[in-house]
Image (cartoon, rainbow, N blue to C red; front, side, top):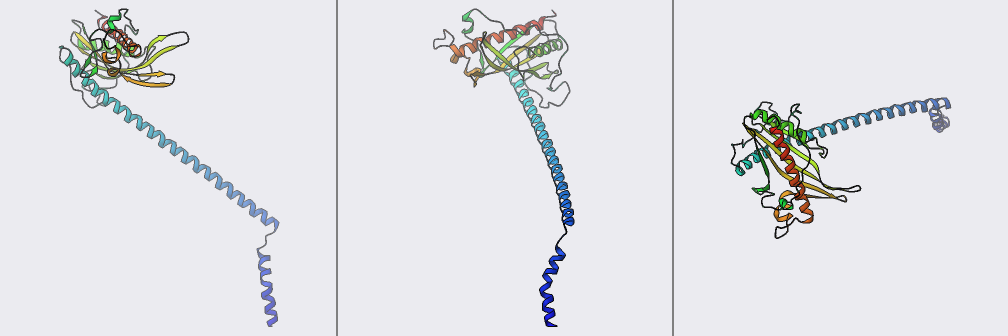
Length: 306
């Protein structure tokens, strides 16, 4: 009996191994099940990855849109503050009718009392979008050629149009500035940015190529950025040009300049104030020419129906 029990215990591992051993058919079936499970897991992983990618793209798009919204709001607020400052500086520099010195802070209010982003006008086309030039060299070095008001370069043009209402002049100014932003040398960002019908005032942000010289194989120019603000009254309209700055690209190296530190007498003229300096002088000359062109066109647009 004891011998039989010992023999049974010795044979038990062999019996268990025999029970756990699969036939080739069973092994194939098991491998196929494992393969199907692996395929299903792979498809699920792909689906999860696509879902995660789509969610990430949606979040990135939403974040980018929100960023653009915030940037637009910030630019609008900045322009509102600049419009008020220009109006105040204009009043200090010229003894004309009082212009509004404050601007409502709400840019979403569509009432006539608010500064809003304008729609493209369909009335009165602008008269000119060309740059004029002056052959008199003394014109560019004379005292006051580049005026500074409160430490900033600021030009002002007042056009008298007797008998014409402020509303009509506003429509003419809006059409002129809109046309100006569509000139051949304008670049992205040049636009009529804000309008205020209650105050008959318009602000345009200008971005353009200011060309110094043009040849068959070369073109010397700078990106020229500035603000224009037109404010219209009964019988006259005022245009101011301010916040002038430049981005000058020389062989891929961009140098920024402000008008205050580049085209004023101190920086663009020699020590005796008798001639223009070579580089800053060409900026001063081209800027004055462009200013004259814009002011001349504005005057024509204001008087075109008279």
